[in-house]
Image: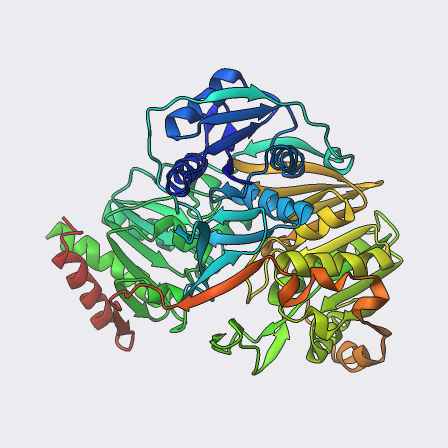
Length: 323
Length: 264
């Protein structure tokens, strides 16, 4: 039993960045182990050309299979078969929603172990050990796998993309899907809700969260962003609640940003949000809860009522910039 | 329709969580409560019942955990479940997510539900994945982080946010659905419901009662093991301002931003 199998998610002919990071990471780890890193692409629109692109990120072999896209269980069927036929020791996933579902389903199916939210993987005694932050990142555990396969699910942006310039052998596989895998059908995928806003190019971002109270509360964040000459970003909670457009969302299933300033108002700082903005150069947080996790990773934390502070801050910044 | 809701007892939000160095497990002493994410799953079940699109005969809360976990079941019943099932056995202690999912699936097989609901994550373990494990064992279609459920005859139309925007997925029943906290605003239990919760039927099951293969559960049956617990990398703590005089606070923030040339 040897080797690492990585799942690569694609959408509209492009691979997901987190998947490319995972393929790169698998290649690096496999070379340390003296083993091979292979990858698999699943969908009803996958071509040999698309699959072959993963060679450039270090996969020496890429399988592709035709199956419904956007749901996890068909991918579990494909990966379970590949692991049973070829004996991979590990399965690796980049950050994102599907990886969690596929990885967990795979571990259940094959009786393996699974670790999620992994931020680093190391080789120890010829085996992989996953590092996973726990309890709101207050500790990091080293997780070892007993038996195979070991399933490793990365945290968003955990693995760096590395182009190897290599090429991969590509093989199409036919897998019979489980009956239950065909009982969920994607009706619509990738619907964009709300206005199309650009937050990735902004140097200064004001992030708004549930603490703004209601959709109208975003006016405070917008006025502040206008004064700064920046844009407004949002947490998943407020996007799901319909307060702000999906295009402005940061975190696990949204965008990743690293502006010069990230000024968070009414954001508690859940891990899912943190992973999308923690590389910002300067993080300022305004929150009324002194125990909010965001204060753990902000450079300047202001404990207070944003409804009192933000309007005055907006005026003060305008005055300062006008002077 | 019969709905089973998976619930979990977790350390109360106000308790500082820490790992027990010797067992390498979460220290679960101290005040505990029903996992807040699970209240959304119970509320989702109640809204399906009250929505009237299907006839919900029964809502059953199911948990696995030590004796104290009964309180999480009482809370679940006070929020609307009709009865509850408590899987408890020393052989289950130390189970990882795959082992726990297997054990819960065994309980669910004995209940034979049309729909299994659960919260998207536990407040302590933060694994997000138990639903996918349970679904694979039950051979049911599954979706996690669902924020809208419409009930049709024999299927559910679910919405969720995935990697590229919002997805709409039709899922045939029986199915396992984990719900996100945006799905609803859980109701508060009435005093009467709280008082009456202890009188609702509660079945206690041991591993053998639901044919759990004990070699697949507990610390020994789990395929992951925590080798070490390390502190996170040191990060210099940020400056903190407590807002007492807002004008002064604002002045400090502006000075801080200006120093870093962010107001140019």
